[in-house]
Amino acid sequence: MADNSDNQSHEEDLEHSTRRGFFKQSTAFGAIALTPAALVRAAEHQWDEKIADAFEKMPLNIEVNGVKHSLKVEPRTTLLDLLREQLDLTGTKKGCDRGQCGACTVHVNGVRINSCLSLAVSNEGKKITTIEGLAVGDNLHPMQDAFIRHDGFQCGYCTSGQIMSAVALVKEGRTHSREQISEFMSGNICRCGAYSNIVKAIEDVKNNGL
Amino acid sequence: MNPFTYVRATEASGAIRALGRDGHFLAGGTNLIDLMKMGIVTPEKLVDITHLPLKHISRTPSGLSIGALCTNSEVADHPLVLKHYPLLSMAFNAGASPQLRNMATVGGNMMQRTRCPYFFDTALPCNKRVPGSGCGALQGYNRMHAIFGASDQCIAVNPSDMSIALTALEATVHIQGARGGRILPFADFHRLPGDTPEKDNVLEPGELITSLTLPLPAFPDHVHYLKIRDRSSYAFALVSVAAALQLDGGNVRAVRLVMGGVAHKPWRLGAAEDFLRGKPATVGNFRQAAYLAMQGAKAYAYNQFKLTLAPNAIVQALKTASGVTA
Image (cartoon, rainbow over all chains, first blue to last red; front, side, top):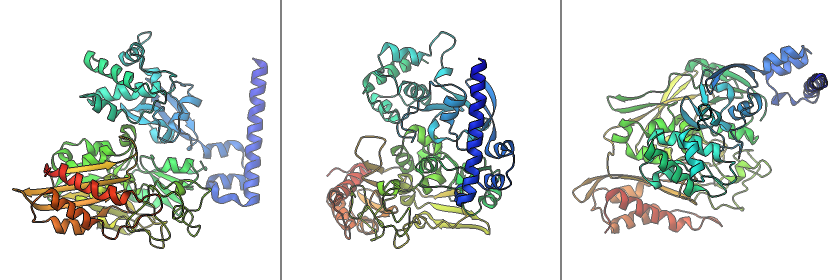
């Protein structure tokens, strides 16, 4: 453990010195246009890293799967990266990172969205539900159970996004026909092609309740 | 993504003041964050406007008012929209995916950039992204591109489905700037590329879209939004047609026709509308209208197919909207 923490602090030092170096270089080479004004000022005045950090990071209060978090996040951090990298909730997957595949689908205040295109800081005060938040203890959510029983996946990479989208779909009442289910699940791409079994799983949950 | 300063605004005038020279408003982010990840847009500051009170959908004496921060799905599913303006719901639901429609706002939809692959690839020339660098699409792979209103500087198309319906419904755009507000017809919001393709629309720096109004009488029935694309859902239009009719017996009393996927802005088919008005709603007349609509169309190496697809789509949209099949 001691070794680990030594490593960690060493890495932090490295990271800080690198960042400080970047500021100096930015100023020296005139790349100021690409850097927020606050950072440029911090670099020019050679302020302490902590002050620069304060400029870089924003406070964020967010509730994830019923747990409240008070965090500091860099404005560029997407909700997806916050979940995976800062909160260790790696059930939400990064597929395209461009809003084209749906692997990163989560619920924000009960509504399904692509977490890769949402900045974490713009989710202040919101309630997030991820795939980790569906099961109650050892009892799987009915949609998770249905995906297993109907073999609604092959490699599984898209599955958490598919399930999050499917749970929302049933709540939205978009399950009147197979065609409607397919249309309103079209934001979730499955490259293994498990679509027919995904539709069966959703029909099962629709018929037997969430 | 480049570093930026993030500011959260609570009222419109504050958001406009906070914007500065290189700032961008952030609403749903579905287009802007994507463009920032690609290095195509590199704002120094983002002003988060999602907390502004611009989320109403309400009746007005002359029709319906829609706040610019309503999401696409909120508008598409709203009872007043479904009842009076079903064409708009159809167009929304033809666009993007349910997740994106839950994020993307009405104002943001109006501001979305073209999906031209040359615009999206920073290694290639694009007058819209880097004015003066040339148009890669003109001599390149231009299958998705314009057949109307293009210039030798840019042949990109506007990707919005919503905007096609709003043009057909003759919506009005309400804009707020540092020196007050202005109102303009939706059809005048987007522009043709000309010599300044970097400008998608007529919004001035620092101006904020606050709401849209939709007039009555509307087109509550006999409407259709036909979208032709490479897969059956979740793709941009090759060609789309918004058709809205008021029928009087078997005659066309009023008609609106607008095409998407064919120009830098929603392309209203005025000649076709003029031809159809007052005439019997027959497939023969629909075909003649489509023929008139296609006058002046110009295709490039890879989008010749649009010269056939577009008139066929016009006829099909009119048939579906009217219920007339012969």
